[in-house]
Every structure is written in C-alpha cells, then in structure tokens.
Length: 216
Image (cartoon, rainbow, N blue to C red; front, side, top):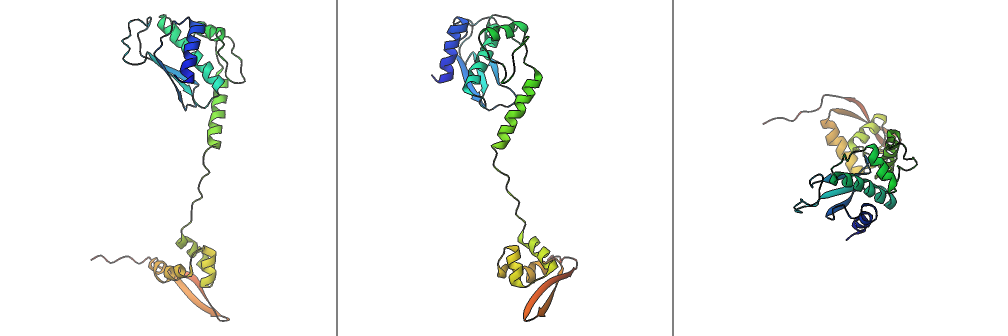
C-alpha cells in the first residue's frame, strides 16, 4: 500500500467513519487545468451492490502540486464520493463546500475558501503559474543551422579568397571548391575570378536560370 492509499484509508476512518469503499485507486497524473478529478464506477447510493470487478472509483490528483495539496485534493474528491454513495447531489453545491471546509480541505494557494466557491480568477491565475513553471523546465530551443551552401552564396556576394570564404562559412576549403565548381554552377550562379597582389578572389556577379537535369 503506497502513501496516498494509506492516507485515503486514514481519512476514510477519520472523517467518513469508514463509509467510503475500500477498493479505490489513487493516482498522480500531470494535470495543469485542474487539481484533481474522480471517476466513479459503482452504483449511486450504495457500496453494497458493487461486484468489485474493478475499483469502485479512481481518484486522479495533479502531480505538479505539493504533497500537502495532494492530500487536500484527495479529501476534496472523497467528499464527492461520500455524497455519491449517499445518493445525494455530488457536484459543487453549497453543502459540498461546507463538508470540504469541515474536514480541512485547503483553498487554492493564496486564496480563501469563502461562500462555497473557489473564484475562477484564482483558478486561472494558478493555471498560468503552473504553465509558466512547465515552460521554464522545457529544454532550450535548438538554433536552426543555416546550410553551408546558403552561407557560401551570401559570402560570395561580397567576395573573397577560398580560404577567407571557408573561414567565414565554417566549412572546409575543399567544400568551397566543390560548391563553386558544381553545386552553385548547377543553380545558375555566375562566379567571377579575379587576381590581385597574388591573391585569387571569387565573387558572384549574377545568376542564370538553374540547370535542369536532362530526362532520358
């Protein structure tokens, strides 16, 4: 029996005089839109006629909260279950909230439980806080890498020696040579070659229509 199941049976005895069914699953689930929820499979108004083939109910609790909030949320869901097996309206009625307050169900963090309701403003604020926390825990976005050919085209518009072009684009000298002699020619780029002070420079001076492959 895990901690949450142990606390369920403790609360059942302490607050509900062991009137709640024992075969209830309690699970933590990553939820940001609510603190918890309950799925009930047994017959309303009774726990005696249930065949026990599966849990009478399953309680799901938001895993993004603290242990104290987990326990408070479980008591909240247990009140739903208590009203259900008594055949009463088990929604968020005034009577429901009075029972929650009587057994010490905590209000939303930073807000008071008053007149039987949690304010929607409080719920929306808490939801934003949780979503912000989750966003902070995400891995940083990977910067998109610009293809070497595109970088080389931009560098050739300014012009430079093969060595300077390779360094500027972060690619090898051989790659620059292959790109200029084959790939860029295929794309129709016109590359002019000039020599000054013993240094050979290359620069794009225009572009023709790309060379289309010949179909057999």
